[in-house]
Image 1 (cartoon, rainbow over the protein chains, first blue to last red):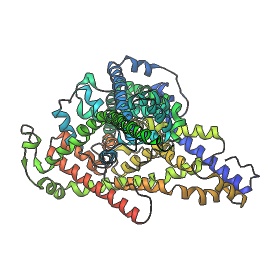
Image 2 (cartoon, chains in turn blue, brown):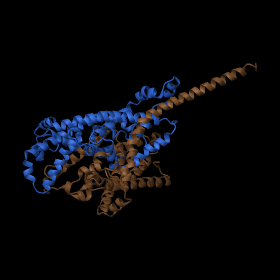
Image 3 (cartoon, each protein chain N blue to C red):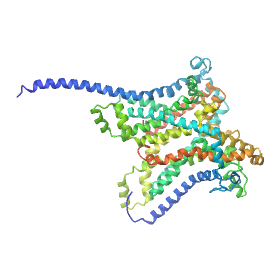
Length: 302
Length: 321
């Protein structure tokens, strides 16, 4: 709002209050992240003694060194990259093609199809029937299950459809049809090139959900050589720490702290957080400008 | 003069008919390609969304792996009765509802307040920076988030307990305390999603008519008054839709985060319907029983969603469908 007008005193107070509150919010969100980064490059003894609260003390890259030495973490990393790339490509292929067709208002049967698609957002078979289905399809313990089971997110499909409906000018397509262009060709050479923002955001949403998911792998994959990074992280970050906490609750504090193994675990756990979250945290700011725009407002109304 | 147009007209008719036929053919050709593009997604929905619904029947059967879904014996509502009569039923119901109501009551207003305030930050660069920072936790995985909670709340090395000891207090075992579970769950969720959830409201705010604001400025309205009388009413439709969705999913607290936060000591509050379904079904192998629990949960949710939507539409508010 470019309204240039002399500010009243109450407005200046208002401005100051807004700034203070938002800065506080920003710091509250930022602080744990800074702490993790600092602790990841600090001497683990210093971390455990509480010497680190903002900046690193006793700088060391030992934690990162250990992470890149760990065969399990590296394998998990490799698996996750594979699942994320292949899974996201499948997601995009399924979602964008369907969204394009469903964005055509004169498509016969469109409303019926949309109803059956939207219905799955509010009602589903549930965990057990899905598990039995995967079992019957012979997908248990196969890498395929992690890719096909999350093939489409209905929410993303609706966002994409709304984008194609409102964000891509229909006139260009109409003109192309008169020139004898087929829908598939129009989709590939007109609509997709005009939808880079959408494709970027969809790739991010789907990619992040593949990268971060652990539950499908927990129930469908038991083969150690196929488990994704998040399951390895679960063992390092949750199970080991939970065990330590439970033992401490039982009164074994000091012996545990002295244990070299625990020292090592506490060294690795910070760097492993950074190493596993960094790829995603680097990408999203580039797409941030699209979040607020039309892409996000794929109104949920079916 | 009059003689000439007549043959021309029949010719035109012929042309027209041909044109129409070819156009219809072209439209069909076009349409068939639309359906072709749609087909993979429809197959996916049929297999991965609708085929599991066929398996719901095991909730009314005694599922036997050897006999399969169809071949297993019908037992009627036995599993539902067993669940409703079990010791777990009231506990799970209370834990689930308490957790989701708490999340709803805290989680609905805070993003709105953040969006309203963020919208008032004049310095665009600083605003964008705040957004970048507050969106970041949304992209962190649940496993890492819970791992961070464990690190920060660790009784021996966690920041919170270091601060407590520095102030002369005893270390507190947050993760094993059933009374602390809900607070940790809800507030870590706020930390993770406050920025992200405010986006949808920010988008709605950017649609406020600028002329209204100009008129209000000329009439001498302060910024606070403009926020109160112009911006807040704009958010009502968005708020209503999100409220309907939240109420409609009151019973479906996700299992992923709770499962990671659970341990033997906090289970009295950390055991909810969805984690119970996982534990009974996939860990202990009671497929039919846990399918019944999950169906009960699903149906309640669906009924809730439809009724809230109905009420909202009756009151002349926005509705989902």
